[in-house]
Structures are given as structure tokens and as C-alpha cells.
Image (cartoon, rainbow, N blue to C red; front, side, top):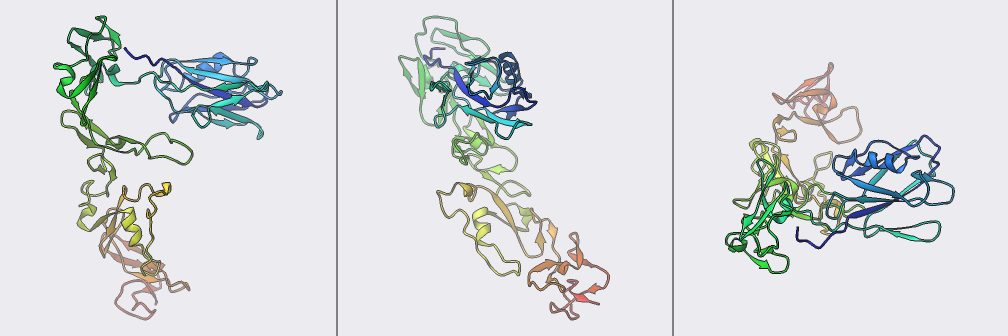
Length: 389
């Protein structure tokens, strides 16, 4: 409530398309879709459609030219969309078109890299990144994580109220929250009356423990083909237990910051795979890769730290099963492998491609006319269905 940052986010849209067509578009905001938006939409129609997105509280919409969203007459309608009740910098809208002419174009200016649209008169229109604070309980209270409600501060003669603690009951504010001030775990900024907490502590009064940070598992891409590059608490895959400063990870994830996806099995740690294999990272599994004929063929996955496509090399784990076991969690018994006797390739297949594996026993059930071989097409004890009877 004491912040001086007051800019609402403004994103710009320009649609070049025949407004008399039956085409429409859908806007996505942080992965959530709007209702269908006809190319001929008025200001009120567009506003109503945007408000069908659950994450958008309210917007204001302004057209610079005409009364329809899209135009194809050489004049540009720059659409201003102002997010009046969603504080902070916001993810950009993303458009998906349906039944529109192939020459139609929908442009969105909502980021630092694409923040301007120039209209038919040569006038530049700029987006605005929102800077209103978007802090839990307005940084003037503590969130009860069981109820989702804010417990507003009432310390040092300063009292706050409201669902988000944004209302100042006693004015002027004389000090930072906390009893003692900033809970003796931070320093009070005399100008903003905000606590600057020591490392390991957080909250408006520095009374809560912070949790370890890791690269986010899920989040909005920071640019084209760039994601998983932001450090967030518990890697967005767990809940911070504020009393202890420890992450409580979602099922299947482990690590102090929930930064690892574990093997499926008895637990999420590296001791899983039901005792029938080893839990290895993608990097390690790639190094143990084998050819179709069973010979070693290492793959150097994640060797370049600057390659974004291998971001998961040391974060995602999988099972490498012991001999005789298979399946993603090493719970299946495997059957003998052999080369398909009717194929020229030396690649090995379960039951030589001439039977079905019973994974409960590890025995092949051979197709009619096929039986156990010695691995070379003659009779033998392999029980691999590799011999024609």
C-alpha cells in the first residue's frame, strides 16, 4: 500500500484480416484460453471474451481506428488492452486463429523485444510493462497456507486490513512490521517502511523461512525457445514449509529445491527402480546407450552447458534395469532376446520377434512353428523362439 509503482500493463494487438469473414481467434493468457473472438468484434465483445479467461480480473479495451477488431483496408486498428486488476509484469497474450484467410496476420506487442507497433500514419504505439506490486498479502501480512487467507500485521502502532492487507488503518505508517521490528532478521527501510530480510528469511516482517531455489520446471518462456531458466522457490514443483525453510516436493520429485525428477518406483530418490536397477540421470543413461545389436554406443547428452535443448540432462532420472528386468520401473521380467531369423539385421528383439513375452515369468510364448534356438537358428536352450520348427 505504500508503493509508488502504479503502472498497469498495456499490451497491443493489430489484426489484419477481412472483418466480414467468419473467421475468429482465441487469445491465451498464461496458458488459459478465451472464448472465441470474431474478427469483427467490437470493443465490448473483445473485452467480454478476454474476461472469460479465468486469470484475468478486468481489462479496458481501446481501438485507435474504427469499431471492428480486424481491418484489411490499409488502415491499422491498434488495440490497447489495459490490465487494470492484474498487477506486476504479465505474460503476453498469444493468439491462435481459426478459419481466417491465410494472408491474415495477428500481431501482439507485449514484451521488451517486441514492444511497439507502427500504424498506417507512421505513428509508433508502445506497450507498457506493468510494475504494480504483486506481493502476497501486499507484504503487509502473512498468508495462512491452510486457509489461503491473509493475517494482516498490527505491530508498532501500524495496522493493516483487507483481504490482501492493502488497506492502511492507521496513518501515517511509522515503522516496519514485526515485533521486534523485522523480527530481528532484517533491516527496516526508513523510506518505504519495508523490511529487507537476511538470507534465508522472508515475509513482510522477516518472520518466515525461505526455501531453496531451483530452475523452474514449469513457467512461461522468457523468449523464443528459451525456458526453464528462472530460479524459483522449490523449482515450482513443491511447497515451502515456512516454519523450517524446507521444500515439500510433489510426488516424483526430490532434492532440496525439488530440482530433480526421480525414477518411478518405491520412492522419488535414487534408490528406487524396485531394487532391480539403478536410477541414473539422462546424461548417465545416454553414456550407457547400446546399439540394437547390444553393442555399446555412448551418446554425450548435455555435454554443452550452453545448449538449451539439453536442460534436463542432470535433472531427470530414469531406471537402467539389471539383467533379466525391464520396464520403466524395472518391475517386468524380460525374456530372451534374439535376432529375427527372417530379417537381415543383427538387431536383437524380445523373443526374436517370433513370440510374445510373458513378463510375469520371463518366458517366451512362441508363435506356431517357432521354438527354442541356440542363437544361430539351430535347436538350443535359449527359449528365444529363434528356430523354425
